[in-house]
Amino acid sequence: MRLFRFGPSGGERPGVMLGSDRVDASAFGGDWDEAFFSGDGLARLAAWVGAEGPRAPRVPAGVRLGPAVARPSKLVCIGLNYRDHARETGAAVPLEPIIFLKASSALAGPDDYLARPVGSDKLDYEVELAVVIGRRAKNVTRQAAFEHVAGFALHNDYSERTFQKDRGGQWTKGKSADGFAPLGPWLVTPDEFAQFGAARIWLNVNGQPRQHSSTAEMIFDVPTLVSYVSQFMTLLPGDVLSTGTPAGVAMGGKPPVYLRDGDLVEYGIDGLGQARHRIG
Image 1 (tube, rainbow, N blue to C red):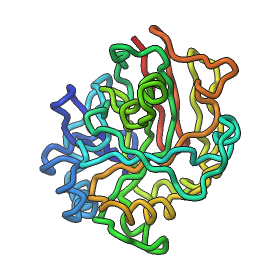
Image 2: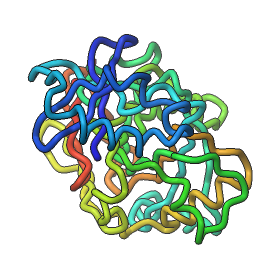
Image 3: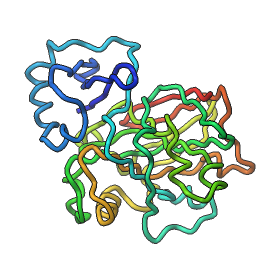
Image 4: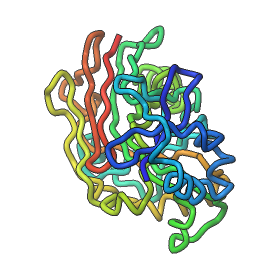
């Protein structure tokens, strides 16, 4: 299945794809949140779609799409998890995953305008594969990790490098401004995204290619990351785990070319859709 959320910011409603139709799933009840995922929501939703989907209202074209999941308890991100990204930054390949957190208030829709935070002058982009947790995960093994995955989504880990690098060296404060975590357009369940381990991942700025790689470049794969993170914190249903970005970020340029007002960022992962943001 492909789940989405639509409507004005803060007032999103749940939706689900039925073929090429965008179905309003408000009548299903609830939202795509912790209660939904922890309560066998995907199975219940599949049954509802089979019974009610054909006659449920359709979402009109042009309606804003919101973040693919309702605000989770946390967004956990992985740094330097692509071999090509480590090479471009001159960093050693990590021996263990690098973990940082991103504020859940940074969530945004896949096509929302991105307002530059006050004091920003080194705004960067990072297209990433995000994993949405479906079951409570604590000290899970790598072999059992997929039992805890609800699906996958497209994410952009926007970063203000001045805040991250020049203001005390803390990653989280460079990653958490409003709008810095667009998620979607969809949450795609694993049965519809079998290619997650070798999917094309890309990002353009003003039509010019900046990032172009494959998730096969990951140093630590999805099962390893779910298992590893669950050793240090309990992952709750609906939590987002973002798996790192490939080469081509602005900070890695020689010289760096950061985002400016008016720039158009477009990006995607084959099988998870595309997104775009105007910077201002």
